Image 1 (cartoon, rainbow, N blue to C red):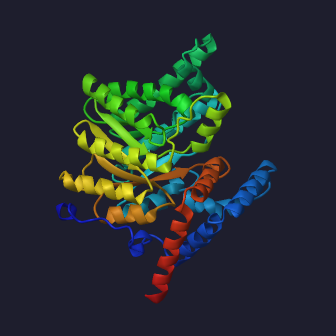
Image 2: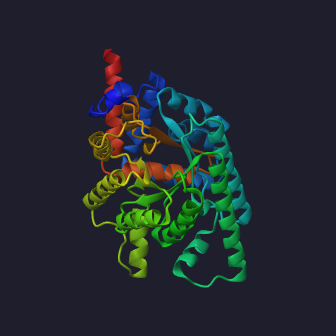
Image 3: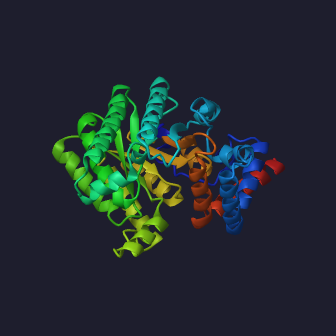
Length: 396
């Protein structure tokens, strides 16, 4: 690995990027991104699918063979085995992500908690395949309860009981991960519940990150407060003597945040521009490298420049590409040119691999389609790279 330390990374080699896909799989991906690259088509398709699902029309089989197959590993942990093994063959780990959303009942929260425990057990049995696990706090607790807690309002007796149950679920999951030596990512969510989530996660860090940063919080750098919050979290960890796990992402709720701020008449918490987000993200990378004695870093990004920057910072600081405190992470079905080229160069890389029943993961799939359409150049970049590889294979 040491020979890789000063070797600059490139994301242009499509033969590496798509080495896991045969010609048929690559052509399917080509046509999928050709459609996603048309915003009007995504808009019509999303509305049509939502309508068809609401009327229980038999469209799930078509979804499963197309967008679901590209962005998800399967409907169960067992279904994901082929995807997990394929990624592993190319030096990429899997982060199993049970992507069922919208639970609002105690029974639903319990079910989600049990499924999260199953992913941890799976990772504990196969650590070479699964570097960590992930969940959302809103899978364990009511969104409205988290929001009310953040405002400091007094909870009713029934809400206090629900809060206690949610805390116990969270603690049980973190305790199990700690016992099984499994790292645990807690995803970021909306700003009006993120403060509550942060406090819960730091309580878990205090308890379980005494020797290793098993519990990892998420910082969404499209929020103006994210970088200062990261600095404060580090200071708290230093003062209290535990290790900080930090996953850095840009963010996923921009339109929702802006709409709510406008509706309720408060300042938009989102950065004023993409350039400001990029600047803070890269500052956060530098900070985590500088404070690496206390911070474990997951760089969750599809941005080529940020990935290159982190490899450069690691090189400049003599950090081996396979240092266990530094990971790159991307979503399954996206940015393979980043993931596979980083893994080929010896860096630690993991893919978020969503799974769950087809109908239940549709909100996740709709977001992926919308994200690829709205993020400047995302779908066109994927489309052009796939096209480039298909042309290369024809000439080979």
